[in-house]
Image 1 (cartoon, one colour):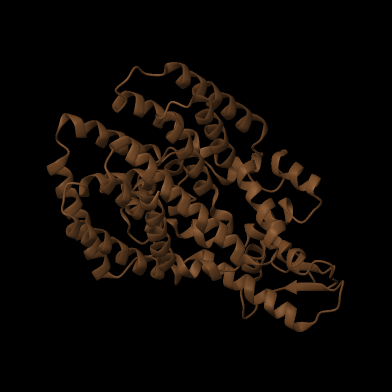
Image 2 (image 1 turned 90 degrees about the vertical axis):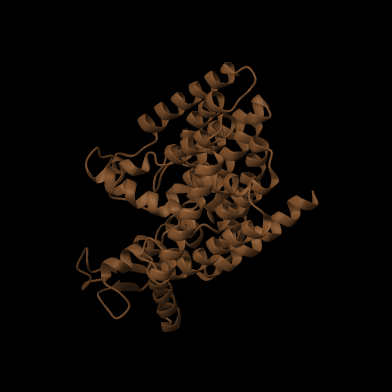
Length: 424
């Protein structure tokens, strides 16, 4: 218990250093829409919006539930939203420690895997964008399902698997992770009855989700392509998993990360060519590969935070590789990755759309608040010194930010990029 508590404090402290700026990042775009849809109405309506057919977003009830809880507790205090997202991130990293330890039985491997996952720069959007937490919540629940799967707690495993699907449909890869575990790691007789239950639930979920709970507009926005663009997507996601900044980092940092990866790769070749370790390697490699889907098939919407499952596999492999070296070397290796993460996250912060749009939204809100505009007035958003009208429309969540922040003022809003606002 003391070891668990100490680990949690370590990954919390390290993660705060890496992602410290996330706590002060303002609301932006979907944050306003989802908070307005799932909170601060009457409770019955909020619950109906969370679990009912989708109207403004994807049908992800447990991700939507996050907004019901945070919106009603924190209101306009964006720090509270980020704090809960951060806690969920830490719990996910901690569960990676628990799952990896159960699979491998090595404390060092498990601790390193948890640490690498916790500070990985690919989590930037998940932590800086309040609306970006679906994959984090989904992976947290999927890890709980895997944990109880390993312990052969059928009922609890199935419950958490269903919950993972209800948080993010991408967690359906859990079915294939369970199969990989059965074929590559499990020493006892396989539990095919449980696999059949999970398979049936997965097929039922896909059928209902795609046939009845996915708006036609979603198919257009998240268009699956089987083209040469898939290779560009694959390259993008591989670089993100390995820790490279998506905005182009400092040359020295990139060289340091390449050296780090080379060292880990050499250790990988030296330690894994045994029958025992090969199965473990194949299992975690399969997790990395499975985590690509369906995202590499959606090349027009690339984002590093989609790779949470793959980063789980990557972090676990790094942990296993380092388990055979001496403690001073382990500390040196994870310290290098930590420093790279700090620098790369700072680099991303200065060039990322989430921060840019959050700043736009904040400037507009502050400007309106300081102008003492008469109640019921129409606020016109044209091209100005803050942003273009189109960027204002996106950053302010199609205008929902005005309703959310200035509740009771009855402001109307008009965006000149879409309509004439002269008579309003």
